[in-house]
Length: 96
Image (cartoon, rainbow, N blue to C red):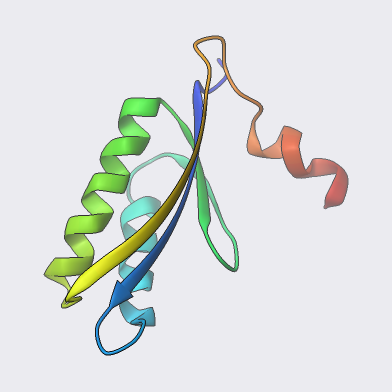
């Protein structure tokens, strides 16, 4: 079954500059969420059910604050279709 959504998330936790350690914690959150994902140099792309992915985005915001960020800037890209979206492999396999 094809995923109905693909979501890319970039978090920039603000704590006297960007805190890379907090970004690592967000990636661990995604890893433990049991969704397919790919970590890139600027953002992490996930695929699966839209509600599940948006819940991860919401949890990531709160996690950044819990881990000490004063605030967080997040950039989110969403592809959604009830009939399914292109998978990560379909989008990138010809380049790997």
